[in-house]
Length: 406
Ligand code: PMP
Image 1 (cartoon, rainbow, N blue to C red):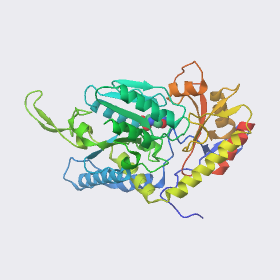
Image 2: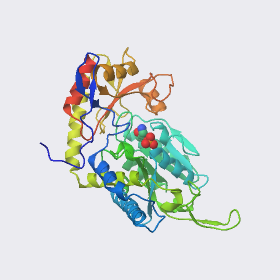
Image 3: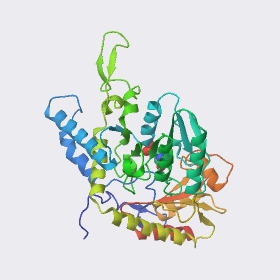
Image 4: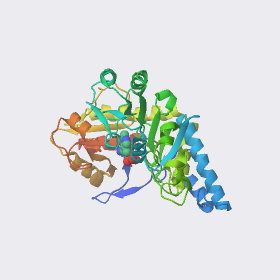
């Protein structure tokens, strides 16, 4: 027996019945879409449920306990992201929500520089985007950014992913941030795929803002995070006007004072259980041996990538080339097979869950597949993606490879 760990996956013994009647353990290889829940998150929710009450709204013991738990969760996330004085941690619904919030808080007239390698959540919310082609190497990314910023006049921000949801490649965030900061340009990092695999310190990444989602960080209870500099957030109109976001309201329309700090953008009753679950995972990851977790994941990645060389017609896709560091995500192009059909058969005949399509990153997937068609998220065009993390095993990787070969 292994000792119980807060990072053990809940439900990793899910069984499925195959068409021939065989019952097998479901192999979940779709962590990049939504990771399974870990004990830390489930336990935090279980602990709080008997005391659950309103946040910031009551004097009773349930409300007091809930308010305390919510604000402690914020402190834990601040520590996880290295947010300090002058920063703000806002609980959101997910990464999409966090980036949309920030997009509406940019000072008027701000240009947003963004590469075409982004997930739509980090491509579409920005009011004045300058889109740079997806680069072929980290050096090319840095040079393209430098060129773009040299030509820009007026205020600008850079927004970039920490790790690609399509290729798993880690983007050169620190180098891009150094260039951006040399022009006085702030940096936003979409850490949806980075945070589950790497420590995400604002300071070390060189980021001014970080966004990520609980459901990809083993805490599937509907919370996300925007962490970063408070000044623009405090100056912006509240994301959701209503109770909590308002400090005082007069008798006439427009007679009101908005709150500052996180409350300004957390109008309405917050998602207490989501925030507490997310913070519990942040705490568990902070206390874990991240090197050991990283090594295990990299061993699985190497096994999968090596094994794919023996799968006829399958090619792993990458933007920056095979040597670029990656998180546990691999996307595969097939010569002559429809990835959606392959994914369906993996599920039906082998009990393996992966994802097929364009992963809400149409420009990048088009670039990677050099296909002219632009299907919807999750349609039959595009690639097949396998992704993993905590609790993933060599057996799952081997089953995927064997199934693909067959
Ligand atoms: N950015 C990246 C890199 C992602 O992978 C995703 C989710 N696939 C998102 C943003 C959006 O996350 P959410 O759906 O949780 O808002």
